[in-house]
Length: 316
Image (tube, rainbow, N blue to C red; front, side, top):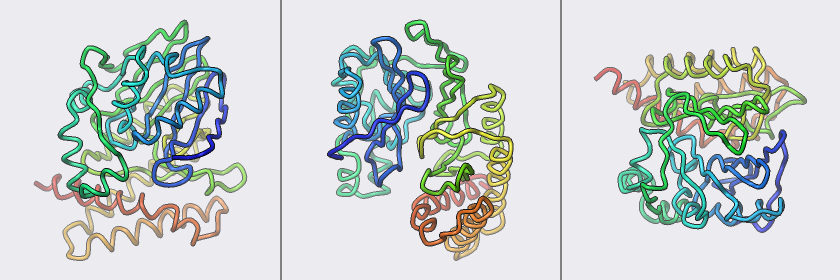
């Protein structure tokens, strides 16, 4: 748990904090403040709940002021803390994609899947205990579902491609889209001046490049002034940045198609993907490959696993 919590305002009534998960500025939690009410988008893990409480205190608020807890999808870096947060935010409702709701009401399958990947010891280190949420406190948000958040319209947009249980949230007031992992990954310490680079997230097990491209384009149909990425923070989605992101989706998909059946598929895909991302960063002026490799190594590893899974199941 972090000793100090930096709360950064990015738009009217929107703050962001580092959840403290995995490494510094890796996974964000967003706060929408409307009058004396709060909606929290993304939860981090159980270990992020004290971060949430400290961030609220800096705005003169408490966990009792939280009206909504909203994970964009149920991967545990986005929703692992939902149960503990709902336990402490007694006035809140959980808003979740219909395909994800059952996994937060009964998280046993989520836990089993993650333990199979990490092992029990690492799982507990990363996530702690995943607490089930009372179904009576859960709202399932279908496509175009709208919440009137004390006079502020929040629209939920079904955005498959990264996961079939993924939605994005459109804040009409500030023209901000909260994109979870659909709009990719972009770290602020890899920016060069005003230029940003986004890489797609292709993590297991529901990556679908065609659906992801459609979801990215649908996000852009809203003409957002900013997109709020969980990994990490807010960026302005210029046409150049979006075109490069879509190009990257096609590039990594082609890598999987070409190499997933090879004996050394993992190393081939990992190395080619890393080289491609480093080249993209160099094109915006970021030249420190050692820093970039260190920052992107986990994402490229997880992307590689997701691409191999996608290609093998696509063939099957």
